[in-house]
Image 1 (tube, rainbow over the protein chains, first blue to last red):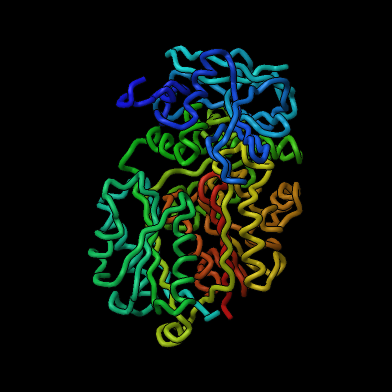
Image 2: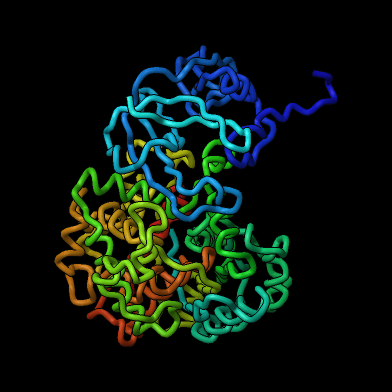
Length: 143
Length: 389
């Protein structure tokens, strides 16, 4: 990539992305390779989801990527039947958060999963998802 | 610390669509507040304007509003903390007066939400969350609070009927508040009747009836030093405690979704500063943008133990005649929620209560009142304690 080219990889995140450029643009490359990643501070061992480039605990910017793997527990969820502008085509969809212990992940339930089949505490896994418009996000499935 | 009082309060009617510009809307609350205080614009040293800027087409609206209200050449400031902007403005005004920098400060809260559509409004409010990591999933305020409702119901056994009961209480008082946008009665049966709009799901488990409405409106508070309060006002209401806290925007940074930690921390700070506790509060206004938010507030403020909010509403303890009257002006659920004006409107209600001037909404002889005002989904917590001594 030439110096004059803007790195806008993050524009590919989610149904509608409101951010194009970030120091953690590599997150998108990982998604394209089927991996959902978080960052780990090599200086103080703090874990961050969502991923961040800078550690607010020790002020280090030496991060390494680690993969979200294994099972987490569903913290909560809600199915939307009314959506903000730009998301109407996705209705109904269910936003949710999963607790992995050292970090939590916010996202959506897999569209093939109805909210009636899960409850707070259900064990979940996280996988990369390609949206109908070609954008990328990640979703939770029952473990 | 010097004593600081509120000597004037004002509020427009909250309406679905205000037929005028933002400066004209601001004039309505300002006129009522300065008339209430018995002062003129020349007596005001500084002004703090409070709104959520994404609704304002005017850049730096404090400037045009200060001009329209005759508040030049005094300094004017602009502050934003989403739905708690005017509580933040009051905390700043308190600090400005307590420090001795100013003697009389006007806190003007305002929002004209009707200039954009409801869907656009939801999209903007969704962007009150983290636009990089959460908004791309299609978030919006009702959905975030719905996640809190789901978590509270799972943790404590709170029910859909409990949520409906909060709206029924709100409507009881909304009917007698001529400044409220929603003034009809609401019954529990409306939430179970599929033909009734109140029962329509917005974001599970929250239904239309669980949500407050967007509105246009303004509020104004005149904050004064002890010397000026005694000079101008026969019934100053004293600011006893101003607590504020913040929490992570990303839900992933929260340690629980069955409560709002920033509200709990703001309450602790305000109680400590005022030297009082939950049992000393005679009347309260809490941020009921959604029915679940009122139940979360009961617990954050210590009116109920964790999980005990449902028992307060089931026992009607937060009605006007109950042990701790809450939102007896109809709350946001009835009044509507013009973002930047809401906190000032809540404060106005408590000031009128402490002065014994709340009309049909008046509770019996309150001495200490409390305002709980939340920005975003628990991002900004603000608790203000007021007293008539």
